[in-house]
Image (cartoon, rainbow, N blue to C red):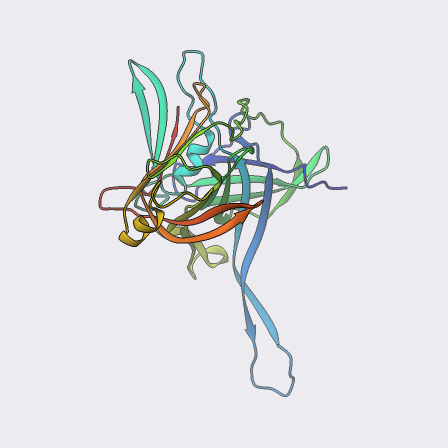
Length: 325
């Protein structure tokens, strides 16, 4: 009997695109809430002119993999010297085309800042590889190895719950799956912080929001190549359109002019800070948000404003920043 919960996902940054790195299960195992692995391929029907009505054959090629999982947005604590530990999630963000900056004060690492960037993952940003042990029993599982992975994510922050990132990675299969013993793994020990009493502002105003969503919106593609095994050279991010939404309790236009700011195309700020302890404080922010649509709705008899957002990237700027302190 195989159980879905007996799934292990481990990752490592690649030093060169598509080359298998070494995996460290003490630091690279991801504590995910949901994991879905899909093996994908292209199919072409062979339908020559003949008296038979059915398809004569089907050719398959371009086999690759998509890995999707939910992981709580949190920090990974501090080390014995008081340095804020580089977060696991940060390496995943880099494979989604985020720039990394280590923040140092008086010789101590006080945080890590990640901002959306430009370039090619695998060249300008490190790509990642995954080992996925799928639905095992207590002793063994089928292991799938993915290399050259690039991705995107969706952030969901709902009142009273833990903030989560839903990552979707596209990559090459390194080899055929094999049934192996389940490895011993260790997970980060910091506890997630529920979204209660946090600081959230939009346009400098303290809206009462039930849920914030941000869709990074990276466009990922498979690089098809006839000279490569399985006709797949790798995967790539070709563009990005970052969007989001908030659903605050409705305010009067005289308190905060949502309609006027949408009509005039004002560029607004947004900020959400989760937690306060060193090593487990996360701030999600943007200085480049515009209101795309405004709809009025209802939540348990309370009037709400359903506000759709677009995150823009001005010259030399970024749409989104995630800071771990």
